[in-house]
Length: 203
Figure 1 (cartoon, helix red, strand yellow):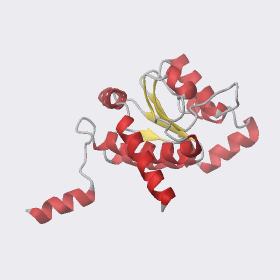
Figure 2: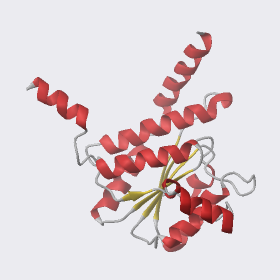
Figure 3: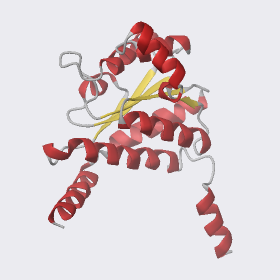
């Protein structure tokens, strides 16, 4: 019980410290992306890869943004890793997708990428390429934000309140923030099923 209370109290503290302005900047960036008809490419590894797949569904279905995640195509992902290596897997995929300045790359990562410490070098290479072609960059990351924070147009850094639980807290709050994004009045284009059913019952 003591650990449960501690974990939830820390989560509440993190929520209270989230940068509202950074979240609003991501909302504005995504709204602009949709207006210009750009595509959203969502990148993540590990838990971030799972987030990417879920978020792509939400951005497409709820926010009406054309979105893709390279980790959804296991055959291409593993072929590129096998033939080219892990570090370039995302940048190669972005090149194959003809990433251009009207598009955006969105990162889910705990560390944000750091070449010096070999933390998610595939994300760093992808972001370097996004900057080269002039594509937008947004992210929801943990710790100090890593490379993602230094190059992003808008980035939410999930505060660290306990170094021992950085990963679970960051990944949990990433899901909370992207759900905030797609349900934001400036982005939500379609009502989700359960909410529409409840509205119908009330009437």
